[in-house]
Image (cartoon, rainbow, N blue to C red):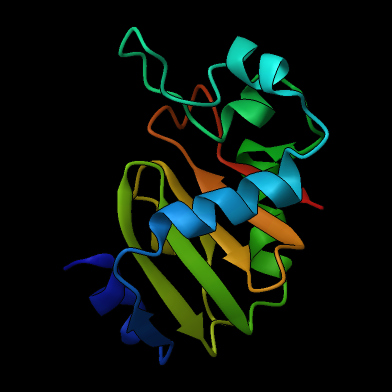
Length: 143
């Protein structure tokens, strides 16, 4: 079962928004990483580089350039967060989702995902599950 199907079963309204990924990643960057210079972002592999190294927005947290909760503390914070409307997007895909009536979502709903970002529509908080969970992440942070 894919993510949209599994969360729809929790009475969450899911709207697919293809091609929004780049826009949402940019909004996320402006909301959570606007205090970093381009040089600092390059130093933490925030972006893909010319040598083919994959960059990740979540390096903001793994390189400790912004305060966050980690691992089970991140899961707990996400579970407690009011989640009426959220965006869900991925690091390496331009597919995205809008979730409405999302209060029933928990960290367990995203346990099988990788490099996924969940953010409220105002970009006040974010929850991220990485492909390195157990070593890096998950992460939860507020703007």
